[in-house]
Image 1 (cartoon, one colour):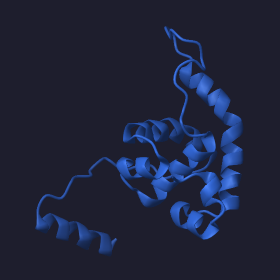
Image 2: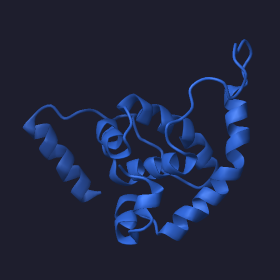
Image 3: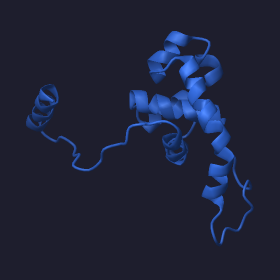
Image 4: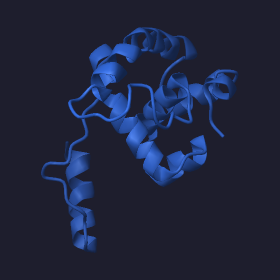
Length: 138
């Protein structure tokens, strides 16, 4: 299983999976962590909520490991199934964790936005060839 504790001991592997040095990751974490409690409070404070903030299921991974998972996902663009295997989570939790954490991380550091508009799956060999030609020319 991937974790900050394990990967940070192997800086070359850490950099391969995140695109960051361990110290750069630590710097990002130091910006995200102080804002996290208020971010969660705002996210969970909504009219009609039946439970107190903090009640309910807790995240399986620590904030540091969820940030690591988000950055590995952005670096490698693996499927949620693969990320779930790497971080010992169900794929639905990978999606939930990354979607919930993205806005906070985006407030602290620039991360690329996913492009869905105009994207379509190539269905024929010709469409695959056309898309590979376009990427070489860009």
